[in-house]
Image (cartoon, rainbow, N blue to C red; front, side):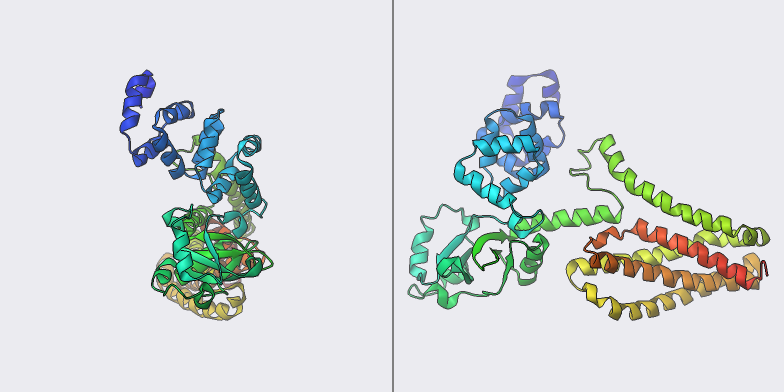
Length: 439
């Protein structure tokens, strides 16, 4: 920004006053660390709080790490407990401890409780701000109590119903509440008492249930069936976006950069992309070793080299298609780890059909480039390579799921590398056998 560069504080202050929350948030992705806090302090207080709430946890942590003064406490306290928890996950431990020590005892205890649950669990992801009433409470009493509730309107879409000891009895939507006569008790109309998640379950489970049943929010229970929190649909949307981004990065064999690509430095992007590329390079050494092993075959029929890229790329592409379909199906819950045996037979049939179709096409080219013998070798190789590549692509996501790993790790580059190695061995083994080399 020109005003920052010129250190025109008066002009910058006037400019900051005119900014909307969205305009100010956009500017934060364009300025350097040295100017980050300067610009933020020039914003109107309400605008600053709104902007801070709109930033993602990484940007919030970046700002707080740069602000060594009491302002940080008011910023943290402006967030909901679940958003505070996600912020503390991003903060350096020293800063997190300092802010927790300065917070109100009740707020600090709530955040500490959420941070005590495992990372990635529903307990870590839930909020403690939700509406709850006893099952014996009448609709009229609930409606009267809503007017005095400290919760915001967007936090009151669902009323959770509990029994003695906070045992969960179900929920009722605000719309259903308004359509029910005042003398009815909540326990009589509470819905779906079996629809909830546990604090220790993966948070993606809550997202799946909210999406499947079109819920506004879902209850979070502890091991004793007591209501301890809630996960709302807006947090689920953020989670699904985060999970989707993470899966796309894994599919491209890129480590999570923890920020926008626009904000990332050259050094960060280099470090995040290098490790997987090194692994894939080392894997592809085996392809080179396979080619070197069949040096005699290649010397006898140089025309074989012409078809090598075509064949191994076809195997990698077929494997990538299968892997993409399986990763997506596993992620959405369409298939489970136990479905592998049922799906493998169908995949073999499909892969054979694809392999035969591609083999017929490539054999025509083989006749013109090397004669009937080369055409047969190329056709047989294409059929087997496509079959093996497809089975690799389908099997890797299931295998990773069985090992409790993210199936998205079975990314396109990884499947392609495995398909390349097997493709080289299949192709030259068939060529050596069929053409009688070394016999």
